[in-house]
Length: 465
View 1 (cartoon, rainbow, N blue to C red):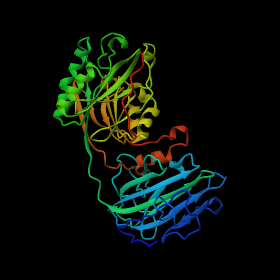
View 2 (view 1 turned 90 degrees about the horizontal axis):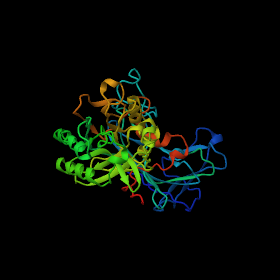
View 3 (view 1 turned 135 degrees about the vertical axis):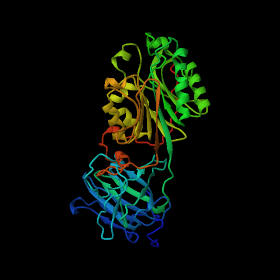
View 4 (view 1 turned 45 degrees about the horizontal axis):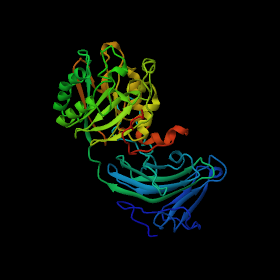
């Protein structure tokens, strides 16, 4: 295979199961390495392997766990420029491929030494630390029917970087086989900004008793969010129930139903997305739900609260069991409700499925947990609460990847709006792009399975009477 130019070129190499695994020489520049000889796995380059039959990098481990090796190559780069990485990976006998068959990219200088990471960093933390550029991790997609999983990423090289060291790792799993196909490293254009304006409403619908009287009180607040060019506006939890003194079943309604129809009309009128909290009646069951209404005036999704406090469980409310992600015109949206925030599993399940923004109708919760959910998952969190800011409890706010409030509605009847760029990378000193690392560094437990960004979701089925 002809060696391709290093700068601005595409490295195209393939691998496939069942291919010719005779010990062919790898392409120029690639080496098989391990940190210690005693943990070195078996390496092979299959010249006729891969998806297209043009070459495959293979690593196999024996019955011992804890082996660790990698295929390695350095590519010339220019500091400050952007580069895209793409590859496909296929594994056999590897339970945790996201941890055991990772790809990393390291920025180094001409001498192979790590360079200072002078790209924009999260402020306020480790302010005296001048970080070296950490490893970059391509993000994994959903495995295709043929078993191949795409890994991809686009990054800006630090100013002093002159080489990008790509490593294809096979590690830790016993009796495993890992191979890579169609590996590409190319010069790229900077990602276009993906701007979204996120709004929260801070309001208690105290007047009225009926669902209609409650929901109509939010119309002027939604109009205000629209006037401020919001793409998404989040309303509070069970808003037709608040202040009625009734039981959840007394205010529960079908979904779709009168309240979703009302808010869908407002979403269409103002050309934005609305998330509103309600009680849903489905056959004999009552759920605490948050509904998504779209700019087209349609019901775009329903999330049923999966964790129930004593007050709801004792009132006959039942929990949901799904973590849907809704693809909007600005990005991937997840939803959680109130008590969900006390449990890290809920926001993590949404993140595993690709959520970039989480809408959170919340009666009350510890705001420190809001900070944690946003930071540990590197998502934007939009909360709408009934708590007053003086209570030192929950806030109606927008929380960024650092867990900071970047918009806060302090007064009753007010709207707070934050503008964010979903294509901007958040980098932490010492950690780098933590969002891309989560799926590779989470503990190898059953919860680490099913990491499936961009998986399609559907509306929940109605319950059978």
